[in-house]
Length: 566
Image 1 (cartoon, rainbow, N blue to C red):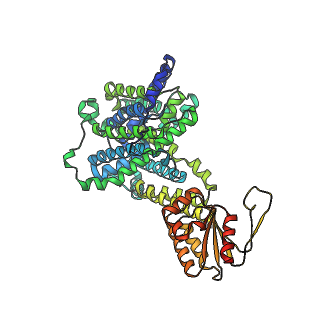
Image 2 (image 1 turned 60 degrees about the vertical axis):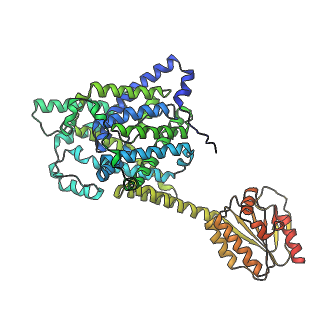
């Protein structure tokens, strides 16, 4: 069987009609996005439990590959806040080698999703689940930044779980450093106020520059020594970037089947979350630009990025909505802007790394607090309060599980709940009605002419309106248990049955056999072509007889009358 691969990177399509004017737009947008991505890549790297350099490497290499091989014109890839919780958890439980293996596995899964054209399927994940785990991640990120934001002095490691973490903060509330807290709060204020002055200047960059200068001044001339900086936490960065930073921290000869099997759930979570976030970002971008991304190409591009990045010390890569929107707002037209953004970050990594050591940790914490606030989607949650109670239940269950346990459990339980509730709704919308005297052919149609079909004594008509799947099969079985045992023919009207599953087939087969044993004939009416094919594959036509599978109710009633007369 020949596989029709849906892989057409947008870069090569756009270059066919590329112009100098488009390049200028891409150049300006790429430089600005690169500057915006700098503090975020550093902050996401540190918050994930790796070094700032690893965060930058992820943004450079991952962002470059996503733009080179992705399916969106304006998508910007790199590390994102959504992965902070996952990456930190994997490192805590499996070490850096576990993260590398899980990321590579997730990359392979993403490529396979694209190869088998599952890009559209990913978009069908219920909206309440997406909002729920996004809000949960936002709350978790905010919680992880409290120590750095306030400059707390905590002996030993901060507890990993949410409740214990807040308990630890409350116990050490007296150790808050006012200088660090001041820098963190001012950072938040600067980021909030900068857009009111200019939308062209990234507030996070302004805050980092100003707070770094303030921190240096306080240390040099005011004698303040309590403000922790990146250099204080990662002394090796002061020496600058070297090729040793690209060395993978794993020996693949030590990988066992047990290791791979234990990391499959984590890899699957990374792949699903990466697919959702990337395609959501690309969809939002399409709404603004009027373009149309290729979901399967985007998944393959994201997958390849996640396969390559771990080999040089990076962390999971995905599409970043904030940076993608920055790219659009500053005139980015093609993936060239994303390539330029990666090159700008590379120049900063090569030549400006020694300056990064002076950035206060409280300032980066302030940046992430704003990121978590923007991720929380509290306005969306408020608007969803008017949605069906089942959607609200799925949303808050997913959010609570994300916060209290982890994202893997949250997505699994959230999807399971959504599927169960969907089937419940589907079963509730499927109707089963009984007719024993006459049938109005105009009922349920736009036809205003009412033509009646009289049913002879001993004929009953049961109409199923909706899919005949396992939930409805049970409901139909309950109706059949209360049947009139004196009936001679039972017509099952299936004109509004779009499909029938294996449970429905088994239920129908049992009904035919039990009715036959009671001397009752079963006739199927209004069977569509797809349902008829399914019945034939299951040999229902041989069991019931082809004459008893009718295309419309008139033929079915005529057949039933003949049987009753005989």
